[in-house]
Image (cartoon, rainbow, N blue to C red; front, side, top):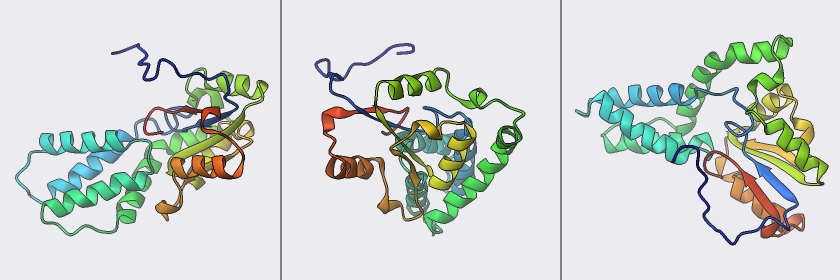
Length: 213
């Protein structure tokens, strides 16, 4: 329901938490707002070219469904699903990285003015932050939390955009993003590493995100 909160585990407590893991796009940053309007049409156009007999509306519904389902995971997983849909319709897909880079090029054109505004100082970083996110980050740091940023967006873009938004300084645990070798990184892998190597327990974690986290 709109404007409501769903409580999945009523007995859960945050009393012992001391580590927070944040997603980036849509949770902290809105630089890439509108990305769905780039990815979905690109995928629909690709599938329409296979002449499967499905209408544009049918393919748009299909693509919207799996893009939403996979949001929050590395972008490559949405492209892997696109390749599977191409194969189902008798096509021979390119490598998923081909579609990922094509999408990133198109998205780069969409957000170029936003990035230019931030780099030049014409636009305040807070203009492209989710309202209240900076105050939340500052409050958690004041309480001694260790903060991590982990995104399904490629790491080079995440680090650049976090710097432009002046939020890198909050994430003393590090800023992480997707790799072309997508099996080498995921939010789950990062959490497992932190539990195994940094001495954190599962009940000491808080997670913030708007998708698959």
